Image 1 (cartoon, helix red, strand yellow):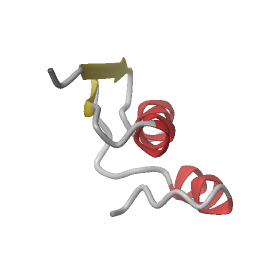
Image 2: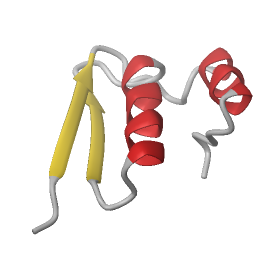
Image 3: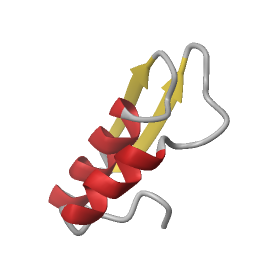
Length: 60
């Protein structure tokens, strides 16, 4: 059975995106979703940069 995870934060532009990226890198079988109570228009560029340093592409 596939496990589903919802990651929820305020803007959905940084923390939840990073958490989703880390979880995906640990277990690719997880069904991951992220959401925000007041979603931003895009992922914060610094979050993308930091995750690339960890070899995780948030934009994929």
